[in-house]
Length: 552
Image (tube, rainbow, N blue to C red; front, side, top):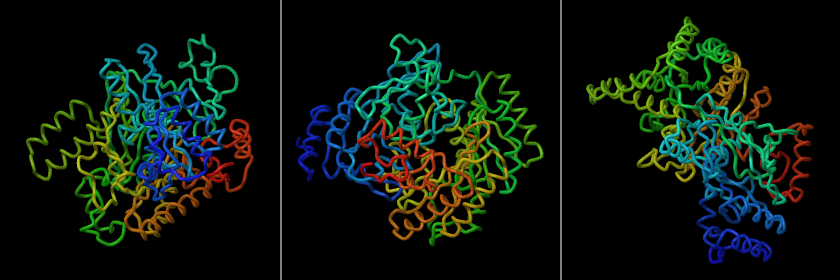
């Protein structure tokens, strides 16, 4: 019990935490100030101190902990690895909750090489699964995101996140969840509750009501295991990049690409990023050249574009298939973009090797440095589309950090620990050029008002919709800049919401904004929550607008 010595409070709370310690072992529970402070770190400049940290080893321990919490009316907040950057990090919605850190539950339970799926626990990271498949000789890839190698698959799936590959719409490639309910009961979804079921991780719907969605973006239960589909190795992978010189030209490019996404020519998730995304991937805010404010002067921004060889927008995606299929897709992409001002440049393993050789021969010349940077980016993108995560894409989180990128970056990168300021607004919009430009222009006006550069990415998350990620990066060491960043986020969020561009996911600081009308959808969610968790102990306030972040 020494790890609970710093805790002051109700005797019943101390007794409950003691009972939790008996379940997980004294080494796996902490209530000291240093630990609570560490878990309160937030890229949103919204530190939320937990009551204690508990690290269960398996679903049975999670179930016991939930029963103890219910008996003591203690709120518990599950996290997978606590790297939900920009949306809450490892913080609960409200202070004083017990964090259930599931990172010890990191077993890859099973991989089926024939039917191409894995069964994993919440602590399994992108790096771990990638390494496991490669070292085991499995001819399978797992989808990757740019959030870093040490992020959790289940954590991202519970937020309905998306990656890069043809399996990038991750929730659509999940079958069979194991869930601990607030009662402590273990629920198997789909066919999994039938012990004899042979297709529990192959057909997600099972028979009867489809429950899996209830446990994503919710506080209805704690997912402790699921089946995730893997992608068979492609005989050929090409990555492509399209530079779009002028801002207004991106509209026709979206219109040209949409038919290829609809007919299946483009199977991977395409990402359309503005110039700020490219700049932040290779450096930090140039304070020496722009000492005042958090926005690049127009002349400097134009100079950086010219020096980097990038346009106002860059389209990035991958082609998977046989050599013949990829060749046909390349030809279709060229035809579609003809007349738009965007020309695709294709990257293959062969071209990367040739580029690396040329960069070495050119040495330290300006052309050599630029080519070397492009080769490094191509290698990272190529790896991600083959299921190998890369931390370099976390660089954008450090854009306004006074100390710049930490030593050894991207190894062990942790934006919350490193004091990065990061707020995201993530609207979903129709896959039309006019909608993309409308969202960008609305956001740009607000960012300019608050003196921030707009970091914008629009991803073709399915065949008909774009998922936007509009980022406010700011200096947490500057109180005035932090206040401006929060005001910028809140105004962009509100204006997009009013215009009909609703976010696909929100940070803990924005949960209460999801139900401005008090509509029947959220009343129904509340009724289901009350039935499954009558004491309101599971993650109060999480995707439950109108509910205080204490108890319901």
